[in-house]
Image (cartoon, rainbow, N blue to C red; front, side, top):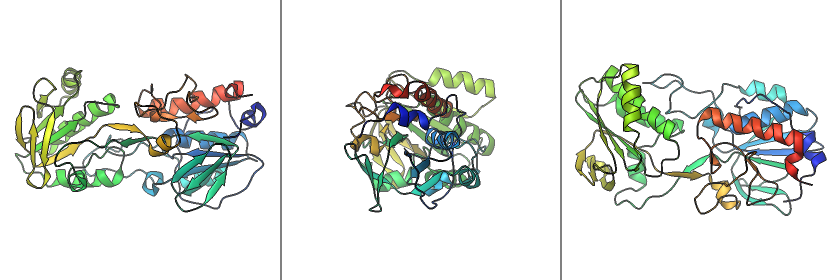
Length: 351
C-alpha cells in the first residue's frame, strides 16, 4: 500500500466525530481529489464513512459492503424486541442520510488488497484505487471438525449471529416449538463475544418464559470460564423463570457429534434430543482481514490502542476484528471515534 501522508490523512478525518452507523443501497461512484475506502457496513464502518464525508465533503468516501440485508432497515423479530441480539447491529441511519451526506455505497465483496498499488479488487471484477483504506472486517465463523456439522446442519441449526436470514430461520423454528419442547443453545469454547452470548441465553430463556412456559432451554458451553453464574444473576433481576440447564466444559457441555435431521446432539455428558438448536460457532476476523495479511495465528487483527495494524503499516482496523476488542456494538462505535480522533491529531504517525 502506498504511504498515507499526514496531509492526506488529516484532510479526511474529523476529530471527535460522533460514531453512527450507515445503511443504504448501491449508488453511483463519484470521483474526488482524495478517495477513502471503508470496508464493512457494520456500526464501525458506517460510523467512519459518514464522519469522514461530513468532515471533508469534497472528498470521495466509498463504503463497500457485500450484504444488502445488512444495509437495510433493521427488521423486527417475530419473537424478540427490536434491539434483539439475533439481528445485525445497526444504528438507524437511512439510505437518504448517506445520500444527503454524499457517501457512496457499493454492494460488492472485497477479494484482494494490493497494498503496493493501493487498489482494492472486488468480486464483481471491478478494481478501486484508494488514498486511504479503513477496514471494519467484522467477524466470520470458523469451521469446526465435529462429525455431522455440515452445511445442511448449519442451515437447520442457524447461528443467527448478526445475520437477518438466519434470524428469520431461528424465529420460524421457535414459532413451531412444541409446548413442552426443548431448545438448545450451543456456545463455543473460544467465545469471542461473551456479552452477546450471555444476551442470547437470556433472550431465548425470556422467549420461552413468555411463549412456551412448559418448554426448557439447555446451554452447552464448552469454555472453561462459564457464563452460568452471570446468567443466573441477570435472569433473576429480569424475572425470567424458564427452566434452563447449563452444561459447562466440566459438566458435559462439549459437543462430540451431531445428527441434525433427527435432532440429536451427542455431548461429553450424554445425548440430547432437541426441537430447536441455536448452534453458535467460534469466530475470527472477517475474510478480507485474513487474505489481506491483517490477522495473526489467532485469527484476529493485532492493533495498537488507536486501531493501527501491527502487521500492515498504514492499515487501520475498526470494530470487532481487532484482537483486543471488547466485542459489543458500543465498543465498535467507539473504535471508529478513537481512530478518527487519533488520525486527525497525528495522521496515525505515518510520515
